Image (tube, rainbow, N blue to C red; front, side):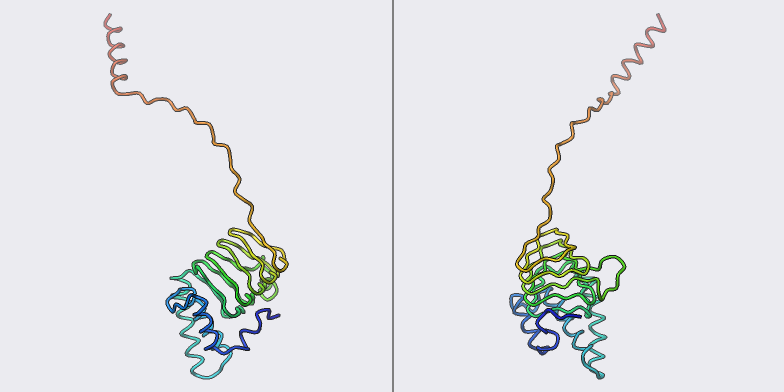
Length: 208
């Protein structure tokens, strides 16, 4: 798999990556986006290193990922994805990054961002590769074996299924304004008094 992230997974140490992630998330150790990347980085570290300590860390990451990251934060970030350095997950809810996808250095992901597969193709070949410095707006979906060029901008709600060149911008179609429907006339409800009056009239006619 082509690594378009600047080699973050191998060239930088775990401590460096975590320090950059913390600084990218406004220096906050309590930012949920930092927590998502913290678990991801530790899981990647455990996969790359053998020994009992790495296995224990891997098991802990799996438990935290299932109980907190996915069930509480609503984010699904696979440790088999390749995520670059200084990535900002500004709004963590419903962010999805599947296995074998690539997110480059200095990207920004907002809430409800889906980086996903296309159809039933192999995950290794059917996932997006996102370049460096890409900004992805809330609700955007990137699907299939596409390449997003460096410093591209993807607007909120955009559905991207084709390659985007570097420094390009992709927006969703604006909402279409529909004419309001004409009001539907509804019959006025009959009151009990009106019904009683008609009944009294029928009784009077029968007596006469």
